Length: 83
Image (cartoon, rainbow, N blue to C red):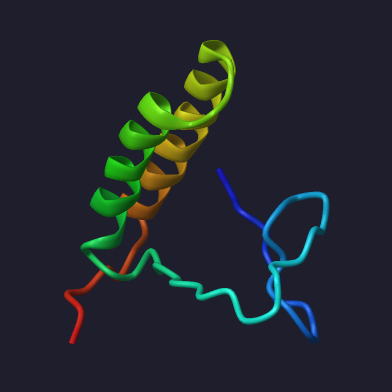
C-alpha cells in the first residue's frame, strides 16, 4: 500500500477532493518514522468507528482504511523513538 500526499503552496489539503483546511486551524502531523504514531492512529480508528457521525457501514469502512494506514505506518522502515 502506498500513500500519495503533497503540501500545496498555501495550505495543507485535508481531503482527496482537494478541500483546504480553514486558515489558522491547528494541525498535528504524525509521521510513520515515529514509533508512537501507528498506535495513536490505530486508537483513532477505534474512536472514529464508535463516534463518527456517519451510517454504521460507512463508519466501519472508513475506520478500516484508517487501520490500514496505521498498519502501513507500523511497517515503515527506520522507525525511531521521538527525540
